[in-house]
Image (cartoon, rainbow, N blue to C red):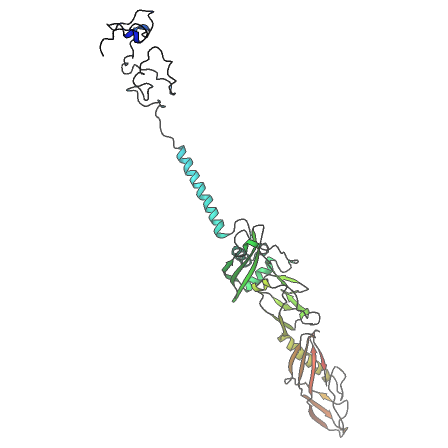
Length: 417
């Protein structure tokens, strides 16, 4: 495309650029060169002469089109630092690296590990939050561990059903129990929480009380997100026959009388009698008794050695009273008399010897009346003067039966013949 004759006619005017490419005269309209005679596009500056980059913002909209607008200068807007000027934007002068963030990170990590350890310990031991905060099995185990340590107050805290009397639920009494039958080898065999949705659970537990093994399934209930035992103490009633059974009325726990409903911890119980002649043997009251509703004290009563001796001593005293007399029929309490049917013996000259009681038997203890039956033959040596003035000797050997009343001290003797 050479020579544009009349080209200005197509653009609405004369050619703004002359044949020699010189600019049109001033005021002729069209494009004007920059002030100062600079050329466009401006020549690149020498390295290092660039001082201030444009602000780091998005370039604005292009200027309104004029009569002629050429393309933007190459490399505008600038996208990097001027040559030889390093990174952009310029950062602060280099300095030593701070260790504070590293220290903070380490401390935070240690704190997290401590918290995790505490949570795990609480979860595994079930001891967080006090008695009953863990599982139902944890509650039973914690209860037995408190008993084993002699801690009565902690043991009672595993149940919401507190006893009406704590006379036998003290540390002192509990330590007597575990001294006799230490609680060891506690094992949770099954922790059945299948009914936990309704706040119920069953725990199968086995523990040794001295040389005895207690195997029981305990019922627990959940209250305020804690598993609780129905009861932490045995609630005992005296035997149903206590009103008519004299021996039962003498029953004691740890040397104290048992009156009405009594509360004790499971384990060894010092069951005795206030009567010095009565021996009491009670069935062991272990964990299974916790599941019973007001169980009775199942006890057997018998006469102890002191009681047997007391009965024989009482018999001996009765017959010793005969020795104080020289009559054919001594006054009470001597139960014997000499039959002088032929009148050959002189009354007032009788010598009563020491009675031989070796053949007397004691049996048939009656716990309802606290009596003991006795029977057997007694041999008593005798001496007397006969009517002829001579001396005669002999024996009296009656067979006797009767009862000894052990409710009295010493026992009283009642002969039945």
